[in-house]
Length: 109
Length: 347
Length: 172
Image 1 (tube, chains in turn orange, yellow, blue):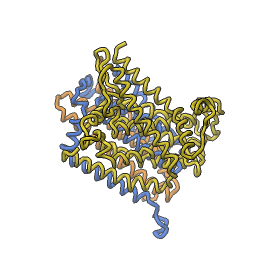
Image 2 (image 1 turned 45 degrees about the vertical axis):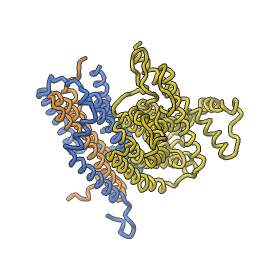
Image 3 (image 1 turned 90 degrees about the horizontal axis):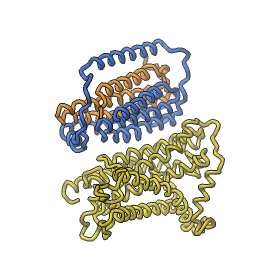
Image 4 (image 1 turned 120 degrees about the vertical axis):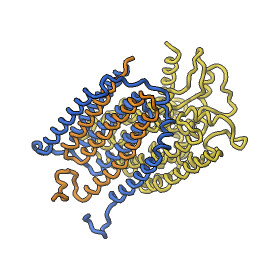
């Protein structure tokens, strides 16, 4: 049985991250930008898990578990970030009736 | 064909057959049961005791006109009912229905997926059930449907917390996510010398939280706010007809069945019943285990029907208040107490 | 066999990720992200992290993305209207992203991980108990802080999303 080369996971992660980054930089709908950021977070998770698996070759179990624990914390932070971010959208929408970020320029100087 | 493969196919086939049979049987039980509770007769014309009524209903569903609103979001409108049966048809894989058996010299575990994070897998797959309701409501382009699905999203996220915490509390004394080990923990010994070693006795509060949350998760009365017919016509499935509607119907009953099986496994000893001898020919053992689990699930299903035709519907603010301000603190308290008792060596 | 599974879910993840960032209707974006995250969960299983896969489905697709759908329906966010040509900022953004991706690909293809086969999965690596031990001993402080962070997020979300009473004025 031939395994999957390590680089493939990393390439996939990089591709997903860049797709997400492109979305975050080019879209105008606040929700879509937020979703793109979630996509970026998850692509990083994939590379962390892949690195953890690579690290498990060194024979040190603890070193590879660090990566998995890190992903758990990313999940927790993502949950907190989504809750606050969506609440912000609700607050903005209540005042402006839109979440097109190009027109949310009140704070601009 | 190897024994392992044959056993796997047989186990999957058995579960799928039972889950598909649940809907017609429960439709009959629900209609006759409600009639009994309301002092009516109920459907009694098709076949003996009206038993073939479910068959007549199925034929009716197949031949009804299948309407699609012209302003509906078509891809999502078709996707929603297809997703309705997915959680129920995937979560059963981690539910054990018997002890390990010996078939042709090989040991076979009577559950489909023997994975270490079993209960988590169940909860993860079950949590995908929200999408059906949300998508159905959104894609129908109908204000009642939309209101129903906004309610569904809020309700199911709120009650998932209490449900998960009560499940975790049941796992604490066992020390494993594997449901077969949860059952084995309940097989050995007794409480106070005469009660079976079921989780429900030390964790009655946890069981009550689980039960209430399960009613909310399956959108059954008294928590059927997403489809409250007196306010929202039929809620998220207002615009659906024919077999698409039937799929929502099936999804609801199958979700009830899998959640009942989880409740029986976590709190009532699963496939085990004190006094039944689980030795002998493997087929007999498997049959005994399955029958006991089936009986426990059936008891829960009857409870679901009984509650539905007994309690009035909650108001939506009452529902959310109950979930966040009563059930969630109680579930956390329950978890802390159970953990303390486990560390103290009482459980 | 493993390669076939990897390719299947990798392609699924890539295709749905493209839909996430390109679809005009946010509901479709969310549903595509669901597909991406489920594919990533499958890849986690392939990498020997079934717990992370289950948690990914439970936390991300089961809760966070449902919250997104909830907000989209609550605010009734419609389709994004075409703005008539792309702005300069968008062009720069796309170019920067493409350049960054090229750099990453080059560094990966000539980097130290080339030709490394993934080590075989061991029972200890997949098992839950060592992971739980690490989480609750070595990372106990971080674990508690994550709990605190979630509590703070709950309070912040409640305060932000609460309707401001008439007595305190309509504008914020």
